[in-house]
Length: 231
Image (cartoon, rainbow, N blue to C red; front, side, top):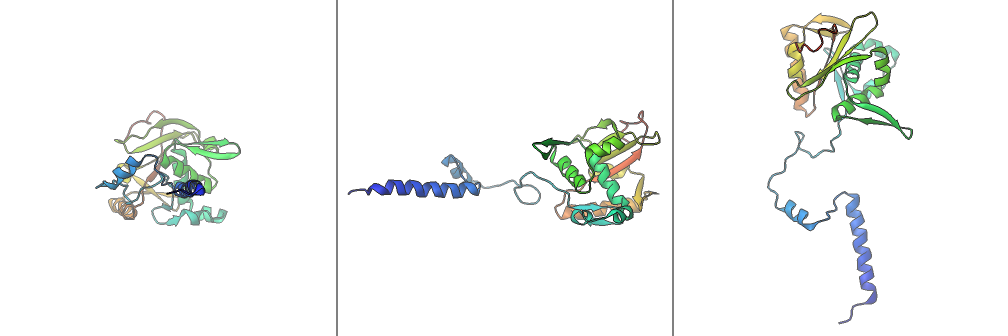
């Protein structure tokens, strides 16, 4: 039997178009053995949201002792709102300062590099005009306690006006809440009772139950000599 001259060309074009469509969906497999292996998989390990994610995080909510706002709402706050909800902005300031991410300019575009958590915090800060560079001009960093999986938090020590240093930190609720002695409410520093500690822990557990990653932000006046004492 004879094969039409145009059949080979037509099939090549059709296969190329099909390959482009598959590539756009990021499903193109270079080696067939990879697809055959996937077909025999019995167990797929995913993250806690039961999805395979892009490895990108973002801040969606800021919760204080008596308030909770989505980041989308916080972006709309004017100066009067910022004064009325100063605990929210104190929280964002803490996570921007206790941060090892790096913000750079490349070809006129802002590029943030670092751990996915640090990147998310810096992006949230930028949404409310808190830049890492700008804050560190007011609160120069003096020292750092880096994050470790055993410690489950990081902290940094900063100078502030008046000669007293301030520590900012962020980390897992189970690591930081037991160390806290006070909490903020309407800009005031109040004694943290066992009942309030339990209430804050319940808030963290409720958010974690909705598949959110929860971090606690802390601040504390501290001398340079006392920095590094993990209590």
